[in-house]
Image (cartoon, rainbow, N blue to C red; front, side, top):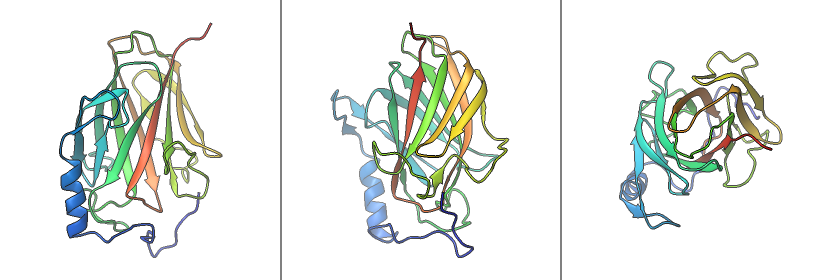
Length: 214
């Protein structure tokens, strides 16, 4: 992962500066739009400096809160209807500023908690998260997006239902929770830190519940 210098984050990836155009995009995102596959409404949940959408299907967001700090993390509540991977779409909705105040600026430091209801009808024995800057493409080592890659001994990765975790950083940015179980109609919580040192307007968090094989 490429680490930026003290001058802050690069803004060269953004197609237009924050301001009137950004507000217009946010207003468009906050409208209810038909889903691409099922025709059901898709709601964009905005909290802190980001918005979160289930527009790619397979699950439903039921709530969002927080600003992304350690004391007030971004909390996303979801319902997964199958044991297949689903993708959460995350967008920046406020200006980007290095070391800016969380909630007022997208500063690339996102403490997260994901609360997931297992409505798949099958028990999950592992649960994996994967970050992607470009949809369906691995988040490579140098793109600046990771599960707090600089920290070799993280203390902020936790799950209510899984005892252990593994992190991968090349060729994927993946976080696997293991040694546990989530029964049908039960909710599991996952906590971790996402860092994005070369921010984009949009990125993705793939969520992959694992079921027993054989």
